[in-house]
Length: 585
Image (cartoon, rainbow, N blue to C red; front, side, top):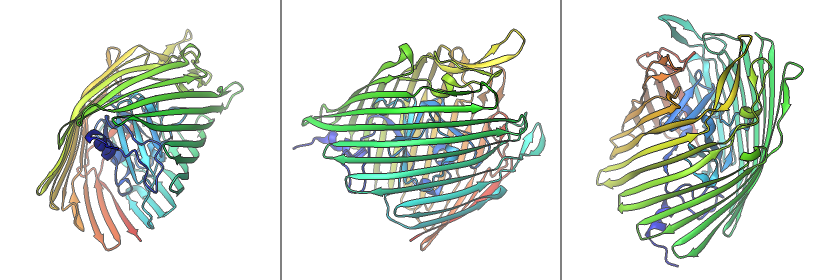
């Protein structure tokens, strides 16, 4: 069978065929969508890896190992799907994934898909796809840093284990006075094990986190949370068919000794997915996916009526995609997803259509474009969470619906001694029935909080990223995001207009190399009348490769800028450092 040039392009971007060691449920993954690679994550802090990506804003609640949530193109963290080997990791309670619980050791590679991609989820702003290691090696890793932050990790051909602890008692600036963060420590354990065969794979992950929760500096509290999240998955393939079975459980225990309150959240999630790919013409390939998931949340707080069980949520979805090779240069990717959710009343059904295109203008230039309509169902926390005298549930929430599009180009090539990659995209996202928390004044003067559908929002902007390397002497990575986000007539909170990352590296492929990563974001709105000032962070990294050992020394906030991603949750205002040693066998 003759496969024309556009299909070779599709195969080179995201292979349809399975190799001898992988059953990849998400292949091909969005060949017409804009994406960023997250490679070599085990050599960096996961927060740094993610935040370096264009179009992405990572919100940090207090340093290494603390809560961290991800926004893509101005959307909430609940609008971003995070998956490992195609199995979703987001909480069914909050809809979010806390990157503070995830150690990047044992994650071989990853990809961020910007924009909604309906065949695989109803997350309208993007996806983070993570992969387990395929390389059969033995590896050990140790690092130690400022404020008693350390980690110890090991990898075998079939498992990884990482243990880390952070005290995070750093200094911060409070209206010109230097104070010290206290009760801000945490520890976490990440265990992953797997078995990869030619036509199936089985893997398991255990995430454990024990965090102190000091709260914002305007209100100190002696609180803590312990979270345990095991996941088990089986995935297989036979000819053109793939399938997956999985289950996840989370046990979260929150306690506040100051107010003598405690909350226990337990949720269960399981699912089954079937997937097939069929060639109906030498230039047309179809892909269909059927998925059924079941979710349940149990929550209990101190008090006689502050507990609830959600109904079991059954989600049925079917998606159909086509890869159409219109010419030797033009790939068209129409898709549609049908979704049914059992506990949403009249909003239980939805249709998510979309279409993407990739046109090869020349050997080194591709043009891309996408348009999609995707709705997100409210999660359990938004619909059912309640605390007497503070929060009200709202089981009548509607779906949040997003109409979005993007367009741009990619340039990639190698010219004698120089290799380059460049990507630029414009995007727009119009969302209605926004799911958002509001204050409800009461007759007695108190205020209750409830999640409601608030109207419309608009996000639009420009994403630019590039990579330049001159032989083995010099490498330069940079990205810049211009973003405007608003809810109704107000600017969106905690969404900077400008974000930039730059990292020049000397001798990138030699045994010794040096880099100076720079991060900048503009001021952000925290309310109608208040803003949080711009943030800068200049670092220094030196790396040495000595036979089997890689040694790295990193400095953060080299110039001692005052840093704060979220109001009341400061970061260290002085330089800090970390040294790490890793060996492969």
